[in-house]
Length: 194
Image (cartoon, rainbow, N blue to C red; front, side, top):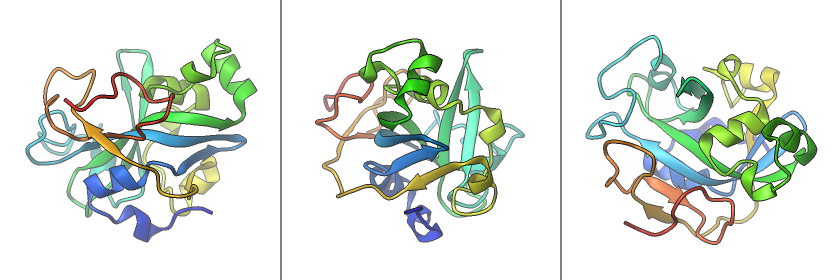
């Protein structure tokens, strides 16, 4: 079942936790979200919106429940879900998925047979799912997100959640804004609290 606006209207940190265990769906591809990272407008220098509105980060300032996709290192796209009220630039990065359906296409796109390596990182999962800038600023609740096929569905029971500092960033690494399902073998990077 596709998640509604009330789900996305949670505070950013709560949304980052609530997204764990839900399913990212794009056409025949499906994966369970096992790792997220919250990005806050204030007190978070790693947040793209911390220095104000730009053409790149404009989706972050829109309503909650939209996509914010950006391109990094000249080779990877990253998928975020916007959060907070309109005018406040916040989002949740989808960091890792447990692949559930469409594995043959994911393996072809990622050029690996190892299931643990298909979606165990933000750049890996967008490659596996074929997510790119055409998926930026789409409504996950209704309209454009549905037309693109990109959706977030309810999962099963709410999983256990652990938090840690961020990984792979040059600033704000100490903020406990990375959330993950502790027993998942698909989580990227280190799993310990630090």
